[in-house]
Length: 317
Image 1 (cartoon, rainbow, N blue to C red):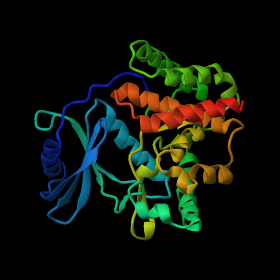
Image 2 (image 1 turned 30 degrees about the vertical axis):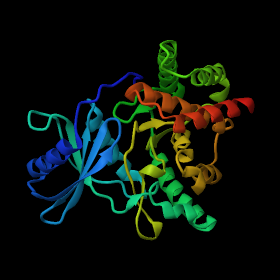
Image 3 (image 1 turned 180 degrees about the vertical axis):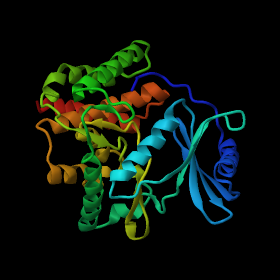
Image 4 (image 1 turned 60 degrees about the vertical axis):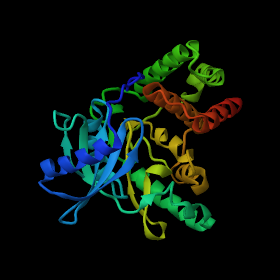
């Protein structure tokens, strides 16, 4: 991974919908009966397609180079180990003169994102803990896949976790300092990062022995639920790697995750390192700054709690 600004290729929702029908026809030999734009983030656009023969799938467009191959590879890898369904990849397609951006087609997982299943927030504690138990059991099954090297799933080559993560974290801090000097990053963010970096050797003093497969972005927004709020699938991995398994846990506290005891449940079931909470605060803050560096978008609603949490966890050392 590199901490650098990525220029996204232009793609409107209308273009995405048009291109999705073309991709399905060219790659699967099927005609689209219905096409529905689903949404997207900084670099992705998703379109739901129902074919005339009844098949339902999602075509995802990647507006940055080299993202498509990585996402498709990671979906296939995660699907081998997760006890919760991960969508099957149906095809991959490089951008060309007809469709100018990379895309891939995948099985459509039923239900909706747990983030938008608002009724879940009002479930009793027992039901919410049952949800957490199922999510963490599936994630632990993914973590049980281990590699002899740390690093990206497509080319892991580091003998230690810190051999992979420390240079990446240092790169993010250096880029953050540049943005701060240019007046593009708030002082409270860089001060929290500097304070955390000063304690890096303490926070990461316990050796990570196992290079575990991680999803990379398993928050409630990427957990799908159906009738009765039963889990139907995990979607949208990001920067999956063979890594410290705790690198997967900071996402559990994002969005409405705390309401479902996700991080708490995982640690209770499977244990944690001595400075786990400091590591999660570090991972969370660095990840959000990394996302800002890549996209140029900073969301105070997400960033402010991460800064606060980092400062609070440092006081505990």
